[in-house]
Amino acid sequence: MQQPSLPYTGTHAAVDEKGDFKDDKLPQVDEPESYEEQGKWGTLWLKIVYYYDIWYHYLKQRWAAFCMFIIAGVVSASIAIGWHFRLRTFNIADPDSFNNAIVQLSANLVDVDPSGQEMTLDWDINYACDPIGCPDVNIYFDANTLRSDSGSSQVPSNVKPDPVFTIIGDNVLAMRNNTDRRPSSLTFRTDVAITNGPTHRTLQSYPYDKYITKLVFFAEQAASNDSVSIAIVKTTGIAVGFNVQLQNITDVHDDFGTVTKNIEVTRGPVVRVYAVFIVLVVWFVTLTFMATCVMNVFFGKGISSGVLVLPVGTLFAFTQLRSTLPGAPEGFGAVIDFVGVLPCLAILTFCSVCMTAVFLLRDPERDIPRWHWKEPGEGRRKSSYADA
Image 1: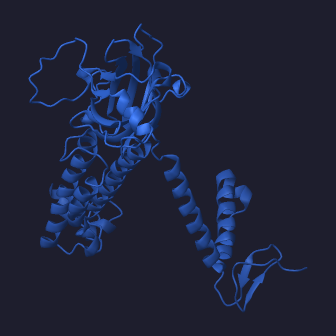
Image 2: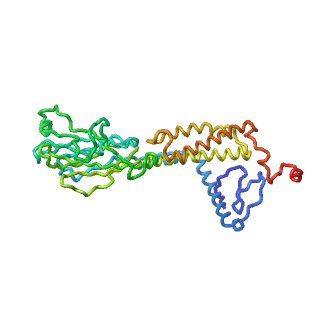
Image 3: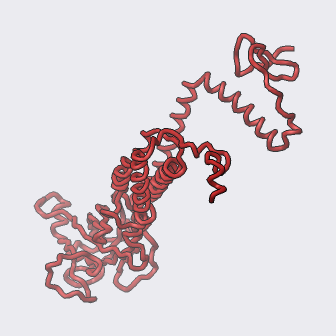
């Protein structure tokens, strides 16, 4: 009968009638118990070991192809995950109003500042004035949701705001007909206030802080104050690290064509995943060093001196790792600091002191005699217990 191929090779290797591996020049050990005597879990373990040996030998012979497969898989998975969690362009547009609105705004997100609680937007205007004859038009934004100059002497109130931009109809026609290119472009910038008041998730909640804002705007003819339809027809731009999206579309309409947009600002998914991942890594490393410290300092297990000095360098590495968190508050003050970085730094400091001071008392690379005791007091004289 033809012998099955084995993962083990040798001059004297052979397979007996039972299918067991035999070698005449190697000392033979007692045969293990049968599968029935081993029990259910023993049988399962023997099968796992058997197939592990087979696959280990197979992959070892083809290690180059296996390494390339692993590298390709890891790179592909990493790129796919990163692409899935990428930030999206914020979207608060009304595409249905593109052909209906006289004043069509295009918004470009420039920046989000969670410390100052403001969001910067650039606006481009398309004035489709043909139906109304291109009169001058004023654009208004809710003044109390805009960050104004702190030196302004105007007293805050809830009165109708002053216009943030005035469209001169004659200049628009002149630019459109290329008869006069001197007028300024139809572009302006607003710093919109964002707040965490309703969410109660401040910058301390990083990376789960959350802010909301409400954009309220309308347009009127400068001469008659008649309402002019206005809408946001296009949005572009990404604030690095933040998702800015329309929270809900309001169905409330007044008699003046006022547009209301509720906007929600949160951290991007990839920022949240990375911050939580860093905290878990910091804890895993800290607990590993703490276990090493307990085994070596308190139980006397010998460990290489190179391992014992690692916690000292890790103390500085953790602070550098903390600084890589995108958009995290400066210094230590977020929740992830109190539950992650700061406790780990304290534990690592204790481990560093103990694992360095042990060099003064004994050789930490050798096991102490007590480590090899199989029973309590095995290495002590029995008379010492009798006198106690």
